[in-house]
Image (cartoon, rainbow, N blue to C red; front, side, top):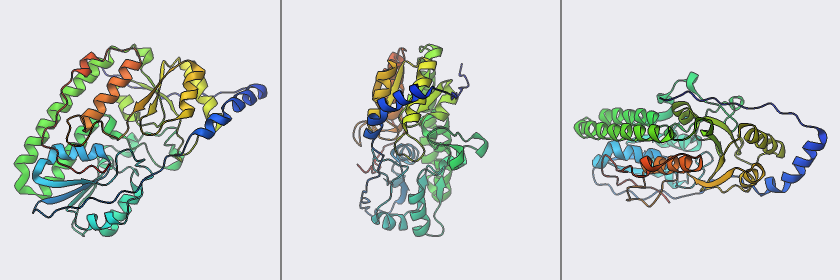
Length: 351
């Protein structure tokens, strides 16, 4: 049975002496945390072979699109894997690519605003620009948290970490492509149904695996809060995250409060990012006695393009196995899950 998660944040108070001690202990540590930075990447050259051109943004969306579209179109991702997609600035060469696109799929929910602006300035008038996240959930379902406070007006955009929402992404991609390319409807229908069947099978395996984690240990402390929607679906508690809304460095007081939350919740493990190592998060783990796991991935797919694991499904399997193992569960049901695509993935993934 899936449970609704709780997002609890404690209000903490300390003596002046305690705050001073804590601030001193972590001042150096906080200084070590590097702010995330975007990286430029030129758009790949696209050969005009008569097929439609579909442009996407982050790698998970590129993978989902490839599963629905198959070889009916050329699919080109814009955001290099391992790049902070929140701050990524597309290079000028992306404008030319977008000017020739037939469809553009972005996550939306204010994740890729510079890319969205470039697309709006360069797309032909009849080209769909589909913001998948905005069409998947309503505003009253938006999640706000430490990394995405409501005061900033930007909701948590990481819907793709929830398999049940990814099915909606796939349906939206299907519907858009049938509208643009009605002759391909049969292909899109077949691919969509095959993909949904795989996701449903995966969802069942995930649910069964998470049941092996003690309920009081289904808690997440991460570098970047990418699991708010996932937590609601699978009955987890997101305790906190290190990276603040400006994607810079947490204050020493932020660090202290997170330590106290971890201690109060008795969190068994904290999860860092494979792409953005966090000395602060590692120090927090050392201070609290929690296990530190530093290789979760938000949107950097495992393996290399062309490999089965280099996919949205491979990404989620890797993360969920990692979480389960660190939090005292049995991941064998997921470890043996067959990662495969519903259609041939020939998309371009910038590296």
